Length: 236
Image 1 (cartoon, helix red, strand yellow):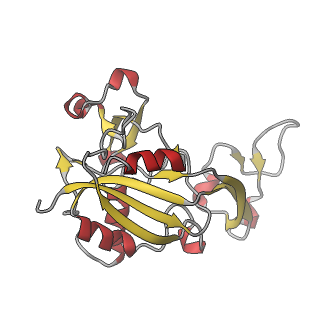
Image 2 (cartoon, one colour):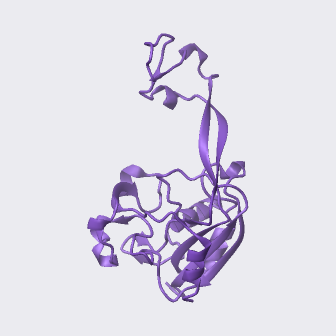
Image 3 (spheres, one colour):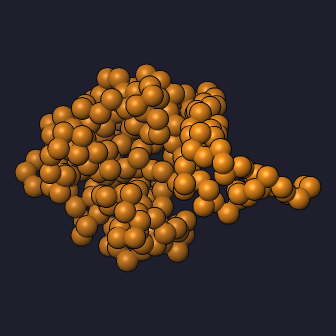
């Protein structure tokens, strides 16, 4: 790849963001989504690869958060009725923790989903790739995280800064910057024995668990302070 250099991508968050604990918002997943949004080929992202792992970190939130909660009203679906926690009848035992629903209410019954919401000033990613093309693809996204189409996780000013060191696979604290298959950990300098491990997807398409999931060393640094970000920038 031409012009593949270490990068720091920094974006202002103009609204609170909803990120579930199992979601990492890796930069390659976002660039892939940007391509798919415009019906473009996402098989050749402007990022360097190590084997089939992109040099693209998980999203790291910056600053001290304000914790909120966002309720959304959703319609019950057939998938909901397959949930073992739901009883498809009107009689439940006293003290039963399952939700009892009437099937004759389907499909008009609604439920309330409550999402934890985090209000951070910024989000960053580390990468190694083409700075101009990376900036272009990120800038086309209106937001990140769940419910971004409802106004959450909206992105403001985005900057792409060259770095002297590549932190896209391993962070300065020596922990994984993104999900990395255990089979590749030693090659990229990650101690899998000292890392948290989980079976997760690690490359696009991130929704295809059957095809793209494997045992990975997963990132544990999900938030840093403004001072820590400044320390990283000082090495530039």
